[in-house]
Length: 130
Image (cartoon, rainbow, N blue to C red; front, side, top):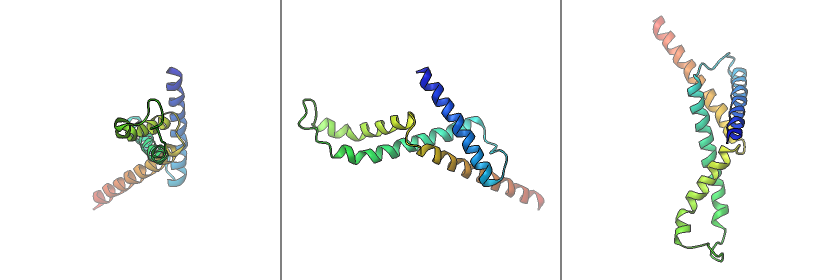
């Protein structure tokens, strides 16, 4: 468990550095000015988004699997809980590295947050000057 935690932390730090460099290059600013807590919330949101997306992508695959012939398969209970199982599978895939979608979403969310902060700062400056 500690190995997974340390790898995840290292991956998150690398992704944050890459996102900061990408954001700096695209907007020309030195720092996003976001707190570590905010960055972590944004990262978690990106991972959750990736998990739901992966679950939705896997759903059609599981819909075509015939489990009625298996020894323990089929039945109303399996049909009822299959969608939740697939969603949880997608979350687990995303939490363990995913398919790379979270990194792209994370960078985009950082860029959007930085743009919103810059607009807010410019608006305050304009209001103060008047």
